[in-house]
Length: 205
Image 1 (spheres, helix red, strand yellow):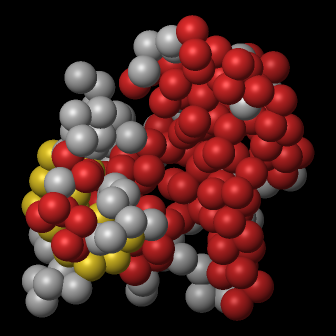
Image 2 (image 1 turned 180 degrees about the vertical axis):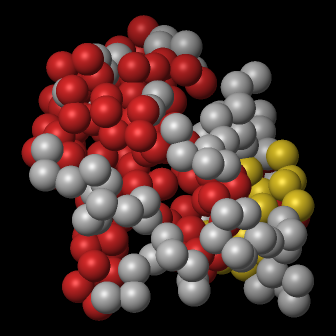
């Protein structure tokens, strides 16, 4: 299998982190990483767009040529059958709830602010957009903080793909201007996740 991704992207890092954890879940997978550079337009070339017309990474390409996009869909496909996806239907639905939350209420604010600052260098014509993302990002962090007051991880007291989905951009939220020090339970959760066996830090260029 191939994974097309950018190591600085939180959405791509999710896949790397999952694959590392699967080494301890009796489900190691052989996956080759294909480096992509978003800023230089690698996702817009014709060859890549033949694999995924939406032109987004990460992208999973199976041995038979089938391709799967959207980071959380890839996570759930690769983690199927492992302890990272609960067997209980209610808990499985809660995992999906957090993943939808990540994509609709968390990533559009925290990840976009980080992209503007880290990838683009916070240019003058993007400062207004950057500032507009702060309130929404803090709203999402407050929702996570309330949940993590009640449990060690987002779904019960065991690591799941929900935690991997949200850890990716939350642990680098400061790169988008978000002060995590005001969220003590998120801070404890971040330390808890990073202390687990087979944890893989995000690579930086």
